[in-house]
Length: 350
Length: 110
Ligand code: SF4
Ligand code: SF4
Image 1 (cartoon, each protein chain N blue to C red):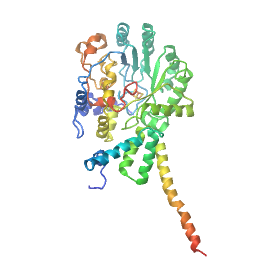
Image 2 (cartoon, rainbow over the protein chains, first blue to last red):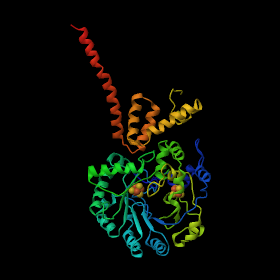
Image 3 (cartoon, rainbow over the protein chains, first blue to last red):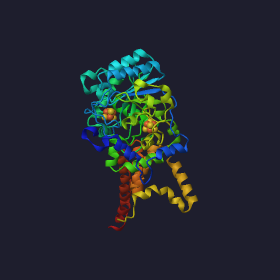
Image 4 (cartoon, helix red, strand yellow):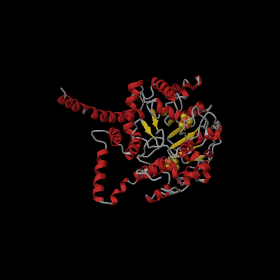
């Protein structure tokens, strides 16, 4: 399977995606999300405090998951350079962020990945560093086999996607053989102490539905995952984050192709939860693109909607005051963050 | 084409209160409470509902509880097992009446 970009698919253009998100449908209008926020006095949406810097190290990935909002894959060559990483380090050094969240693609495929992690750790020995590791990368090439050890050495927190505790459902979303490799990688991480009680090494799993439906309640599903993975494979982990698929990129393409778009949007809109709306992750996060531009979140990054603070749109021009005072750009894809128990990179929010 | 069942009608279930609202209100309150987390989990209740939906062969309920069980984190294997439970009880209910047939046969046979 190729990325939408490599297929030259119309939906690989962010304008085309935005056009869908902004078009009126029988059950809702193109600016429904803003209207909902107005009703609860949250419009324009404002940040609370910038605590998390989520850095996208590139769109390159060893997998081509069907729902990927990054449209990542082996055919994507956009990756962050060491120069841009240096500019990120300046922000880590001089500002108040408490968490660095490294994502991609597969962030580990960036040749400067290890250098960058070491540099962050040497600036701040306490800062939380999260790596969104897709698990299979650990087995993809001998040069990645020692990643668990590297993660442990730098006290990295791992967040890994595993859509289900069975092969069929996992592979249908993430590709043939992904489940088996993920299980092997989880065992290697457990062997290193990750997800094992008492070690302090955090391994969180991320669940997202394999289709046009909402995620299950986080607590119940976490208990089920823990039981199944332990009983069958002897695998342990810390928490399960349930995430709602947002209607952009490859998931949007799937929704439109399978004629599920309208029904899915209606469901998200019907489940709008004001508590989740006040806790959306863009209120305490800044997302950095592979080329250093700044966005409200990873989703707005993929839609190429740069932050509205004109004097601080690139990491090299970081101005915390303007970023904190900016208006966050919202469109109908945001309903994915506010449906039901809410959704963020750290799971539910309400 | 006109048919007796229209998938769009499922969305309007809540509107049955347009006629005899107090009864509908009571029903939906009861319905909500039945499906809440209790001695059985909401997930277990959803699987029971899916099985019952197949027994009563209600297309609305089958659609609704297929989505609901998936949203409760069930997979195809669990869902199909639930439908087999419904089928086994249905088949069994027919077959167990064979004892009556057998009794009658014996009663009227030499
Ligand atoms: S592993 Fe992550 S980044 Fe890579 S294709 Fe899958 S969802 Fe996208
Ligand atoms: S999609 Fe991004 S901008 Fe919209 S609510 Fe979610 S985090 Fe905020």
